[in-house]
Image (cartoon, rainbow, N blue to C red):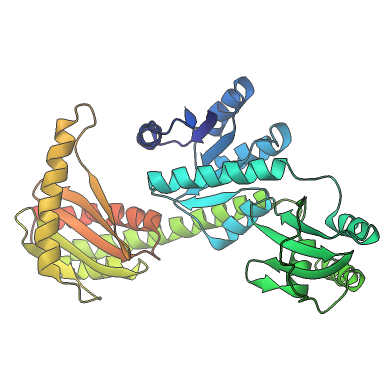
Length: 389
C-alpha cells in the first residue's frame, strides 16, 4: 500500500478525501491541518506522496514544500488550491510539483491524479540522473548508439529523443517535434533520462540540425535568459499569492464601501445586487434567488438559461440534499450544494431557511472566487429578504 499525506486546514475536506479513498486498497491516508504537523508526520512515517493546500495557518503550503525540498527531496507532491493562477502553477511545477489541482476537488479526479503522480515518480526513480542532458546526449552520439531516450521534467511531463547509430534523427515533446522539441528538453533543469528499445519500424528523420549545433543553440538561449531570476520558484509562487491576497483585500474593501452606501440609501434592489455580483465573476451563466417553493424572486440571466426548469429542479434538489444531510447525524446543517456538469458548475447555497441563491458558471470560472464573492453578497441579500423594499 502507498502511504499518502493530505495537508489542508479544512477538517471536512480531509474527512471527505479519507472516506473517498477507503474503497481503494492501494492507498493508506494520513492527514494534517498545517505544514508543521505534516513535517512531524513525514519525520515519523515513510510517506510515498504529499498532497497539500497552499493557504494554511501555522505553516503554509509554500513553506512546507520549501522544507520538503531540503529534508524530503525524494517525496513527490501534488498541490491543490482554490486560488490558482498560471504564474503560480508555472513556478510550482518548476519547483517539482507534479500536478496542480483546482479546488473544490472531485475525489475521483484526485484519485486519478495521485495514481498518475505515483506512476510518474516510479518511472523517474528508475531513470538516470546526476548527468547534464547535453553531456549524456554527447556520450550517446560518441558511442554510436541506436536508442530511444525518454527525458523527464521534474514536474512530470516527458519527451523523447531518437538516435540511430549516434545520429539524432527525431525529437518530440507535447506538440513540438524536431529541433524545437530537442531545444525545449535541453532547457529543462534537473531532467532525468531513461533509455528504451528503439521502436520498430524506426521513425524517419525530422531534425533540421545535427546534435552539436543544437547544443550550441541551447547554450546560447540559456545565456540570453540568464538575467531572469530562476533561482527560487517557490519564492516566486509565494510573491504571486501575496499579490493575489492584496488585490482581493482591496477589491473587498471597495465592494464593502459601495454596498454599504447603496444599501443604506435604499436604492439597490435585489436584481441590481445580483447583476453587480455577476460583474465580479467570470463565466456567469445565471444567478438567481429562489424560494424553496421553486418561485424565482430575482434573476440575472446573461446566458438565456431556461430559468423555470432551473428554479423548479434545484428547489427539489436542495430539499432532497437537505433531508439526506439531516439523516447523517453530527454533520450539521446543509449550507451549500455543488453540481458539476460537462459545461458548468452550479453552486446553490441557503440564504434563509426558505430561500437559496443559485449560481451557474462555465467550467472556465474559478470556483474559489465564486465562493468568496458569493459568501460576501449573501449577507446583503439576506438583509433585503428579511426587510424587503
